[in-house]
Image (cartoon, rainbow, N blue to C red; front, side, top):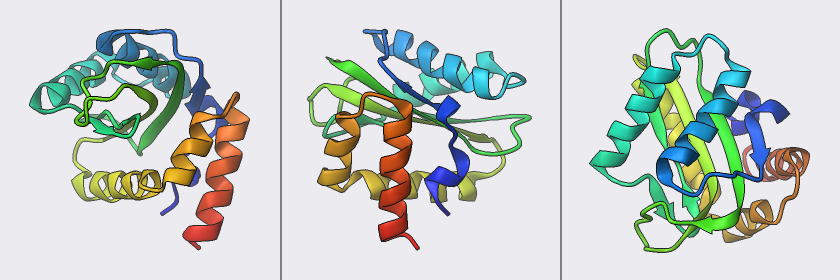
Length: 155
């Protein structure tokens, strides 16, 4: 499973404008909805908020991985977004967040979601990859870096 198999340039945004957690979630959902217009945005928003109440999805080192399952979702829908500003997202390490990997998945596909989440987490453990992604100025740059990285490490 490759993350890039689920991505297009439409799933990626550089330059988030939100500064609060809910604004960021809304902006990430804007991107998801543009890719998948039939997505139940309200259900996704409520699921993401509920997940954040359980514990922050800001895993540290400038990264957050908000995720939720929704009904009537046919496949995993990832969104990658980069903020130019360091944002307070209640990170586990107390540091600000710039890189967001949101995952919307079919509610009944927990194994697939866990596998995908594990892949994203495994990729983002690599300091060099994270640092490269945070320097990007366009969705194409992010996609190119991910394609190259996955080709080198996950063939």
